[in-house]
Amino acid sequence: MRIAIGADHGGFELKQAIVSALPEVEFTDAGTFAADSCDYPDFADAVAEAVAAGKVDFGVLVCTTGMGMSMAANRFQNVRAALCRDAEDARIARAHNGANVLCLGQKRTDAATAVEILKAFVETPVDDAERHARRRMKLERAQRLSDFSVLAEADPEIYATIKAQVTQEDTEINLIASENTSSRAVRIAAGSVLMNKYAEGYPGKRWYSGCLPVDAAEDLARRRACELFGADHANVQPHCGSAANMAVYFATIRPGDTILSMSLDQGGHLSHGSPVNFSGKIYNIVPYTVDKTTEMLDYDAIERQALEVKPKILLTGASAYPRRIDFKRVREICDKAGCIMMVDMAHIAGLVAGGAHESPVPYADFVTTTTHKTLGGPRGGMVLCKEKWAKALDSAVFPGMQGGPLENIIAAKAVCFREWMSPEKKDYAQRVVANCKAMCKAVQDRGYRIVSGGTDNHLFLVDVKSTRGITGKDAAAALDNSGIVVNKNTIPYDTESPFKTSGIRVGPASITTRGMGEAEATLIGTWIADVLDDITNVKTQEEVKAKAKALTARFLVP
Ligand SMILES: *Cc1c(COP(=O)(O)O)cnc(C)c1O
Image (cartoon, rainbow, N blue to C red; front, side, top):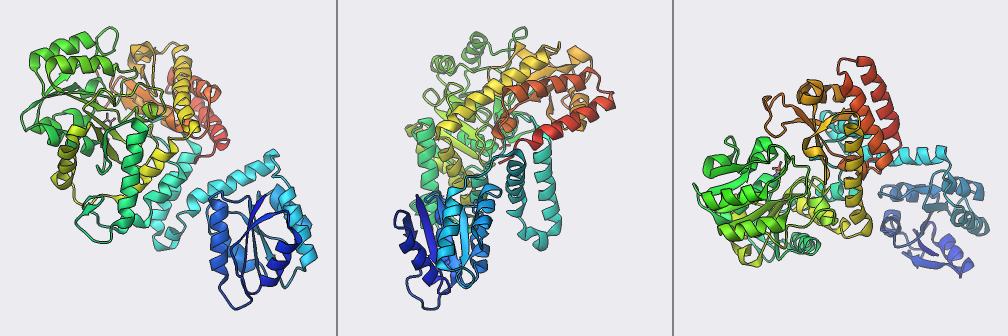
């Protein structure tokens, strides 16, 4: 067993007594090593950091009363420090509260009692009875808000908005396919002091001094991105997915050149050439569509179109396409048409990272993505490319489009990429797809028409118009009243306006992140059908809302 131990001058003697009484324990002694006056937070910080980092099993902190030490240690995330006066305190702090740092007061506790307390502390397992687990979960849940408690005084109005968002995430079933729930580690990096640094340029070639820390962060982000996706080169500076797409256009083609891309109303994205977007204003956009009967990509038709219009770029990737994309086939088309292959994997990046969707990276010249959708990182963008494009891409981003990069967000991207290297996270990608299929089937089994007849990825589209004669707008509003959040979405060849739409888009990435599985996904699918069967039935909406609240209470949002 590994224990980190520390004390100030007021706890020095008791610390020495504990260490010598327990030779079988592997103590990491953070000091102090003499009885001279010193500052207790220094030792609390060292021990709490070791516990938070998982470097030791427990921490022990001693000062005159134990109170200063417990306050200092409890400022660290994932640390639960308990001041104990006897073995009974220690047993309860462990069993009920899951304490991982023991605080002792030299003035109150003699050496023999201290050793007895420590033994009780490390020998007592955390009690997983439902009521204790529930209360510990509430401690964790409170941290989602307490991370921001400094705002309660500094800016109560903004604090109220964060509190409202925390409550919303906790109590609603979020099925917005383009959203996810970032980890606390990602959020902490995103809110870090790295935001204070101006770093125009790239690691090692900056326009400002003092860039060593941010250089290291950005290097990690770039290297991890390349490792995770098997890419030659990564640019992690784009502020969002649209900016990532803009960077590729700027790096490769000229105003007026032709881009062949999926049209927005069929599942494409604004930045793929919508007339209201910069892309549609600057470039000559030729849209391709899905097949009218299968509602899937027809690669032969896209090939014919590419050979005819001779685009400079063939862009694949979508915001609302529920089927797998055959990147190998797209490469063949690009080779035949002699154009650049660009893939925007914003929606499916997490599935690609986890091996639940074939990767476009080996085939494409450029792969753009957001980092906040299935990937679950901070809100931002990224471009991966083949080595021969690296220079052109980097100068398109800076100085071409952006000034100083958001190094705090880049660090958060690095954290996210590291998370994806763990086997659990790879498994998460498979679970997202399994949950999506289960939920889709539950809705389909109730008679709803699913666009393309099903799903291969993290989202599905329900044609509520042809099934129930209602618009996507009204369907989404009824679900919102029921604690289920989806968005209205056009379906291929939609006859409704983009404001009303005939469909809704549903994606379970967020609920999968909070730990829900196929059983919950199926249940939620049946609730969606319950609500949509009669969107005027307010009683059903209230019942589903209550059920949604009870279900979400069991699944902690990270
Ligand atoms: C979401 C999305 C984007 C853009 O994302 P922003 O960060 O909102 O600019 C780009 N492409 C696709 C396919 C998307 O789904």
